[in-house]
Length: 460
Image (cartoon, rainbow, N blue to C red; front, side, top):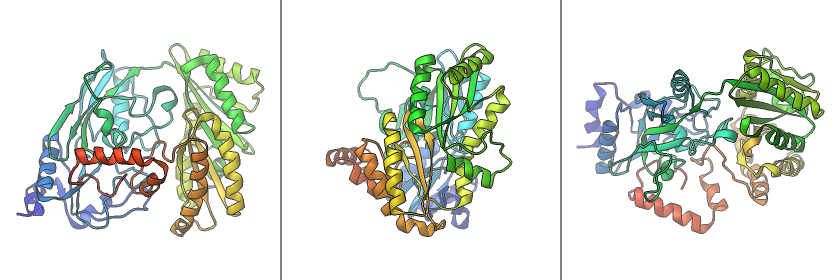
């Protein structure tokens, strides 16, 4: 009996999709990668995931695990061969337990980041991971890509925010490592193999997440700075002044604000005209917001940062954050760009921007550089618009990437900070990691997925 025949029973509960119904699961968020699926299965429990994986293993059918389908590198999109079963976790949305005493939350893989944030808030706790797709991305996918976001500076990325996992392995066995322990030195820390592995080593079905006390005080400011070096100096000065109360520190270039003015004029901007560079700062702590806001304002003005807009209340702070979070959508409206999700030592970011900008403008005179990102943790989104704003621009991607990645390597950075490798950077990975590192990765893949059935064509 074929796998499709064995899956027919799932169709009665609407848990399996065939044909045209699979289309939304076969197109990535950026609409760059489009594949085909043998079918799309939507299990509602770990037991059902296990059943599906065992069926696929028995028939030699590959599996593409998919969370909210918000990957920016094609990691959750099946290949064009149409020979893979997509396993979507959208029906696994149970928040199993919130343990306020242990500051942990146990959830199924299909729970959205927004739902986790709300459940933590209801328990007077904070789950600090946060990025633009928080309403649709799922925890399993966030873990599979080791996602970051705006609060990594203080709290770390998903790797640091996770204490335990439950994973269905390639042969259908279940590894139960869903423990909420902060200290556990009993051998290798196996969960770290699966965080950031993009579904190539196992299917994450459950996670134990780390919670924090809920801050009661917030201070937010949007500040013009002369250049990226001034932004780095401001970051270091603030951290010396208030320590880890600096929760977010976002760098924004003038082209970002210009795109927002062009496409979203309803979003009020305090600057006129937009400065060459600005930073969005958020502090958080216990106590009162008024006192923290006053302290931030005093620091900014004492250091000559007169073009600084300090939010007077939560509504004004939300407007500043809306500007920052709307930048990716403004780019989408503008057209197709060549995107880079890079990380650098924080002190090297000014040099990178100066040197890479100059070479990019010399090589592509019509380039429009849209740079922004999480300066506080060294993560820069370095995106470029050329004259062709259609998919045709990808014909120049290799030449653009060669310049960007050469300067990233020279400054000891990384080609992927928080978006992963997927299909987009799979070939590039071979040129930036050593032969030994690649061999070790392949050995781990071989040990956990000897038949190569888990998310083929991704990462390696």
